[in-house]
Image 1 (cartoon, rainbow, N blue to C red):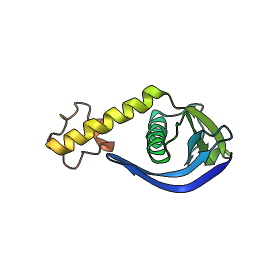
Image 2: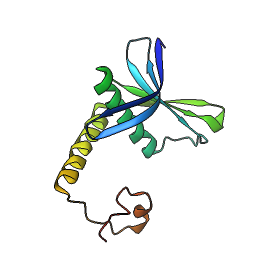
Image 3: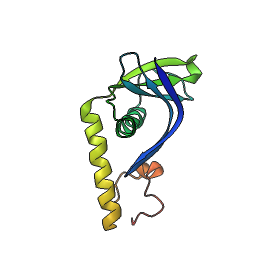
Image 4: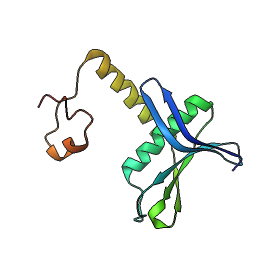
Amino acid sequence: MKNKWIDQYLGVEGLRGKIDEVLELGDNSFAPLDYKFAYWKDRVYDTYKQQLYCYAVLIEENFQVEVKKGFLVYTRSKHKLIEVPIPLAAKAEIKESMEKMLVIIEQNKFPKATTFKKRCVNCTYRNICIK
């Protein structure tokens, strides 16, 4: 590792976040590192991957570099470090979702409510949803 930036608040139109650490690696590539107050359970949850993909987009846009991987540190498992690949397709999906969200906001057209009510618990729209 050549450099690291701690607690980076980064943003672009439609996306912002606070990245625990932005790493500049020995090969001049960059990577997000996110600490999880959790135990390692032999798999990386999709939500953790999505978060790293979002961070990758933020790093690429703000640092003008390519991000190919990220890291998770599971603090309750003796700080186990897990490397997570960040494919181009995943970053493209994040950017597409950002564009769709901006259209929703601009046109004030919210998506139809799901028929799976358990999804409502963590939904961003749960307090304003027209069910």
